[in-house]
Length: 367
Image (tube, rainbow, N blue to C red):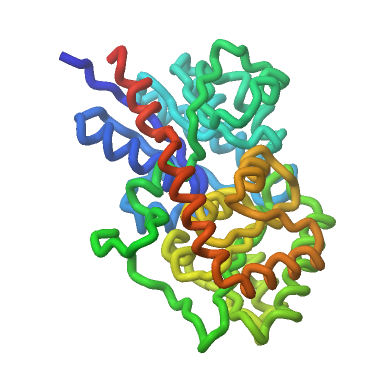
């Protein structure tokens, strides 16, 4: 008979809500005791409510400033210490949460972490050296982790991208024919106008330590200015922001030219209703590409997952306002482009490994 485990998940972002939801459900189904913690962070908290994950909120997001990031992280570590010491988990699981890793290390708890972003230097330095096991996509070389002090024997790779974990369970996988059995969520207010295309833009993670730089923000805005200014005759634009201050700024800038989505919504449904996706981040760009949606990355920094999406034909990269307009016009003009992307995505996602199955097997094989 298998022993039951006490497992602590620290779930900090919308991506992590989607990523860990299947694991939490599977482990609860087999009667393992689960504690899920998070912090005050608008998008993650609201998406957890939509996805029915019970989160214990501990501390706050630190914003963009260095001193506030430090203060909130230290405060959160102190609060988590008492909670996790009382829960007495067998294992801690996170997406390289600095606070979870520090608490798990301090309390002597087995520490399992995921990461697909070695470019996020600050998070990597604070979390990766403390992990007992690091799970990551196969496309990231070991050297990217070893430079942070991770021993090669602690690295476990899966042949898949992280959104596979939820797309196979919740999403509308790319198909050449419609499937009436796909689970559909309540539709947010996003629609086409006549023959115009619907273009969804996802803003950058401006408060992340690796991107909290004015130059990066200016570049993103210049790109959006260009396509909204020059393509409004052939497309309707919808913009999905990450933070309240970002939403206010974007609403003021494009109030009469684009629709800024005010509520936290399920990104999968927004992507499914769009004709073209333009992403300044990583997760929704990968989601859109794997769903076969014509996808353009305008991320301020290049990263391994983006390079894979581009090299495999799942997405295109635009590094200037002019190039973004050129690619977008090409996608709008080519009637076969969307069908081609669906075929590519369908083939690739079928070959990918589910990281959640790997995690659950890893956690329970010695239980």
